[in-house]
Every structure is written in structure tokens, then in C-alpha cells.
Length: 271
Image 1: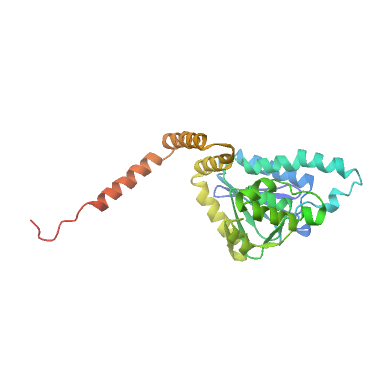
Image 2: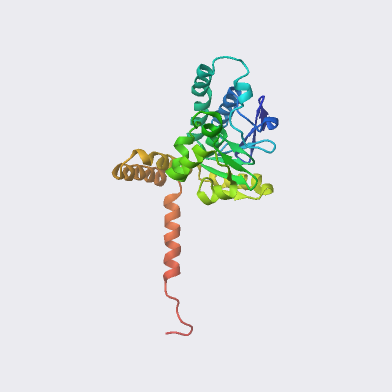
């Protein structure tokens, strides 16, 4: 099954929904319309019973170059009004759709990942990148605005304050290799391996989709909780896992195997 809106394509294969930003001539830069189409694609795929994980990627040589600045200014209106309104109406709902998706989300970063595009990638559950990709936060250094698309929420959580702030205020370009070393992404892979690796990873996460989403909620909510509250939240999720999944069977099977392995072996001819 495949469908295409003006600038966003979706397809489903073996339970994996793939969303592809399709403005390669603009490095898949975001317009308000593209944001709305992407959010609609995420929400539509998540409501299908046959989709167990999502992959988000870009067409051509880029993942997402952030805002399409030409289009943002095309109307000649008051940017002080139109940009905050567009962020509230289109960008922020897209960010929440990714961060709170009901299935695991993999970002497959196939090229330049800048500004708002970086925010979207970091809001996925796991991001992998082609070796030729790079990451940059240009808003402060080049545009005179602050980072958005959830970057100021996600960057310090992934990098810590020093690197998050340094990356945000200098506009430094971070290679995929360094992004992996820093923990900005999960893995950097050869360009030709990105798509198959992303789908293999998505299929792996799809097999335990409910647990992935539950773990995401625990980790993302930890900053708002004290230790006691977090321990209680973990226990609630353990109860659900033991009641609804195969955890009890898995634990018993593992324990049985360990018991068999730990039994002494009779010596030959012993008596």
C-alpha cells in the first residue's frame, strides 16, 4: 500500500509504515503544508492495525533542511505574526505526533539535517544516519531566532548542557560519525546501508512495539519525577507487561534453561 500527498509519500511493507519527505529540490525543507501533511501521515498510519512501527526519511540527498525560508517570506506579510502562528498550528502538532506516536518511530537521516529537521529526527525513538549526513542548528548563528521543533527539549537530554548549548549557539556542523560518538544518534552507517538498516531496526522494534512505547514514556517522563514516583511508574508498567505480553513465559523459559545448565553432569561410568 502506498499513497502520496503533494510533498509527503507513505508506504507500508511487512508492518512498517515509511514516511518520506518529498521536496528533494529544496532538501525537503519544511513549509506549513508539509508539516501538516507529515503529521496527517503519522496519525493515519498509527491508526492502522497493520502498522507496528514507522520510518521517517527524506527523498534525494537530504533528510530535512529545516524551514523553507523562501516560502515563509513569500507572502510578504508580518513574520512576527505569521511564524509564531504557523509554529503553533503546524510545527508543534507535528513534533507531538512524532514524540507521542502509538508505535515506535525510527528516523533514517539520509543527508543534511538542519534546524527544524534536526528537531524532528531527535523526537523519534531512535535515529540512525548515513555517513554522509550532518547535523546543524543554524537558528541562532544564521537566522537570529532560537531553536525550535523541540530541539531545546531533546538536545540537552541527548547531549547534556555543554554540547547542547554549544551546538545551538555556534551553528557548528556535526558529522554523522561525531553525532554517533556524542550520542546524538544511535548509529552511523554506510550510505547504501541506511534504508535496509532502518527497516530492519523498525521490524525489530515492531515485534515489541508496546514495550518500546512504554519505555519511551518512562524515559521521557523521568525528568518530571522524583525517584519514588519513577519507581512506581516502572512498577505499573511491569504489571501491564506481565499481564498482557509474553514476559511471564519468557522469564520461566529463561529460568528453566538456567536450571538445566547449572545441573551437574554425571561422570562417565560413575556410580
